[in-house]
Length: 353
Image 1 (cartoon, rainbow, N blue to C red):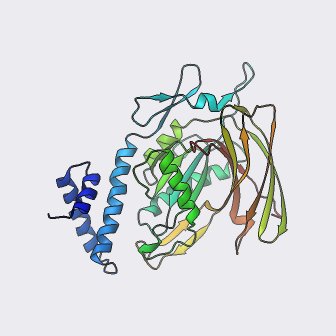
Image 2 (cartoon, helix red, strand yellow):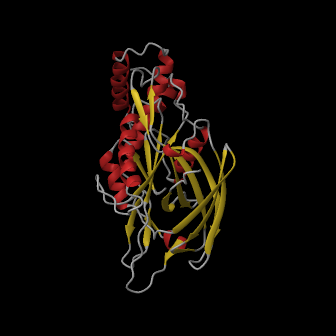
Image 3 (cartoon, helix red, strand yellow):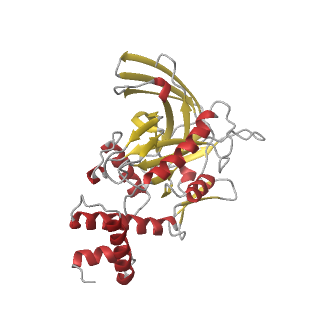
């Protein structure tokens, strides 16, 4: 198979410098694409799309085998292990220090599970369903703190970000936001990924995997570092029909040393059903839950002790058709430099919000 230097470079990246395998893979995908009868794209557009997706697919395969892992040190401190498992970087020790009374074990908080998805990607519906099931389990049990196990007993908080970089394939995702792509690219840099892809799940801002791979998702949830749950209280006001103001106060159960953490506030919306008439998912009925509609920073903490109460405020822009019955709020703490997350919690919206 003859190819240009640019295409050869792509294929070498795809196949890990094995050009023959890369060509075979490309031919297989070309055949599948032709059988699918997608005549709306020009050959060059089809080729560019397949190369882009193949690069994502194979780089994900490599990354999935070398994900950022979290292990527990003998003294109980968490350690961050680099992607090649060759170098241990003990960043967590200086970031947070758990303080508890002798003989008293603090309640561990939930793990934040973030999905990056798109209605324009044919690989995403399966991941959307998986994350919805996982999120509904813990949303229903949020008040009891006793989650019923689906495939893991670890409590989770779920958020789904819809990206817009697949909109050109024929279907414009109605929930897509360019800021979601910005957030995903921040994870790409922090986690040293080779490329950006969907569906992607990021666990605690520390590890990632293909969102439709249930085994990998649950494995990373089980392995994720957990931190003592903070007592977060919220009060709300509606100065304008399109604005929701929230005032937050929290008592941290850990100390922040040598870094800063942002208190982030997100509003999500569930129960979406979309009849997709174009693009890769043409003819399918798509369901989406926990769709992030607004994400704001309430405050930033630096060198914070457990004796100091945290206070923050955020103005959240609401959208046309907003309904409290379909929405919820999540508060989480994140290191904006490393993108690591140190706890997340559901906040119930009041009836008049």
